Length: 453
Figure 1 (cartoon, rainbow, N blue to C red):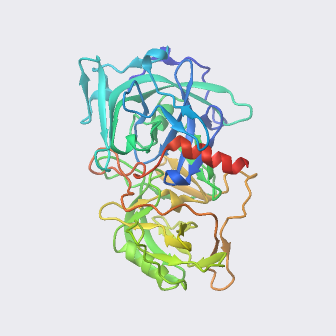
Figure 2 (cartoon, one colour):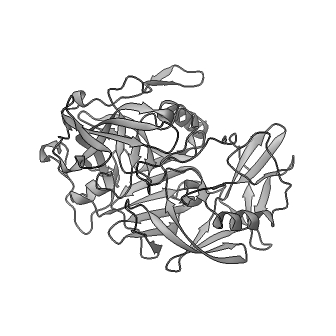
Figure 3 (cartoon, rainbow, N blue to C red):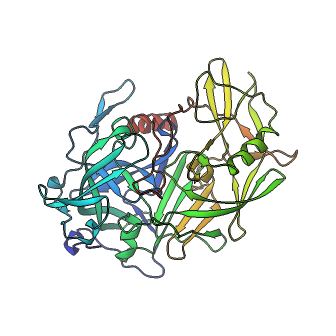
């Protein structure tokens, strides 16, 4: 991958064996936005002078793209009872460190890329699974502003390649990633790959998902010696964070069943094929005491239950995956609570898939996950992400049967039937994001209002 050295405008970190991980300049925090499909978002700074963008973090795709010199992309959003707030749109012409990727670059030799003679640059198109959803534009080189994961931060200007998304279609116009998508996949064009190839970090990164809806991201983090690990399956034409599950345990009912699944932060909920899907949902259904709830309209979840008018908690079985290599992955967030007319219901947050298996973001709750591309392993360890975050909503283990008692918190409305992950182009590639989402930045500000009030 060709990158010009003159793009490096900021101080560069000298990598040593004791160098700390690096993260986005301004902080390592990520924020889960329930009304945006329960995905995690970060603020990133790109260009010279640096401009801020709010991007969704997606391990299921590779390209980092921003809305760019576009006519149809979202340029503002409305805050409830407030004035419209401007959204930044990337423009190579306003960044002195930006340069188009030429047509003769090796990056341009890909099925979804071609030479744009009119723009004299390498053009790209990424097509996603959701109907008519895509981003099209040109590839550019510019600076991503990072910093050491310390306080205070040492600034780092990292030259990267990103997509200048001139045309967005489908869900990208209706609220999904209207301000950009940050691909974290294995391809050489992803930011983790670029950082490692240029010597900024080890070829690894971590993401943490706190039950309170905050998290963090660190590039170069290889985890700890006491984390559990499982190897990636690298047989696909398009390598992904694909692992093998060997066994499913729903409470004490253990089933030996082998299937592969992709750990994808860009998909809100778990998507599983049969027989794994049926083993889990039927195992749960047989042990849940609340009555089944049948919604008046179709939603993505098949198994929902009605909570009593005064019910403050409910008990569900434990779910544990035994991974290839023997590690145990205990899923702490298998359900989601919704408000309906007249009360509350909760659903098993597992969607029946007809193709690939995806371990969505809900199943990652309560863990720091390490995507180690040097050792080609996924690492995990239980974590709260920030020691200062209160843990009052962590699952409490019930003394009877070791089942998990879930406290009921203020719920969102249920996702419609149209909600689904949409992967990047390539037949074997997964995920990225969820359709049927609403305005990204509006939800972010609303969430902050709740936290700070």
